[in-house]
Length: 128
Image 1 (cartoon, rainbow, N blue to C red):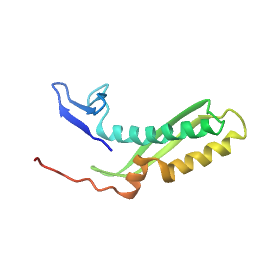
Image 2 (image 1 turned 120 degrees about the vertical axis):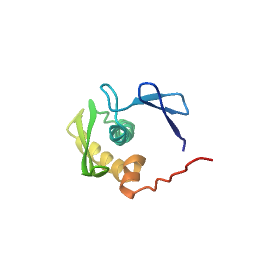
Image 3 (image 1 turned 90 degrees about the vertical axis):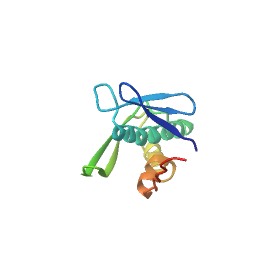
């Protein structure tokens, strides 16, 4: 599937993918924390999958955004993640299409959300 390299910089940390994109992260102003990046991944995966599927059915949404929030169970564990859609429908009959697509994406197509729901194993490799 691919990989991301995360390394320390003078100002914090940076994640780089194999295509050369970078995201700076840390706890300071103007930076995403790792948990916020996880929430962004959930939201991005959902709307980036919903968008083409609704448009393909002739119901391109006029506005498509999500708010992704998390509830903590403890200092280092999330209890739940909630994806809340903010959409503007192009017509009344678009609501049913959007809801069906969004539910299908959530249940079967968003790799990030499904991985969290299934409890994907995270392995540790301390070097080669």
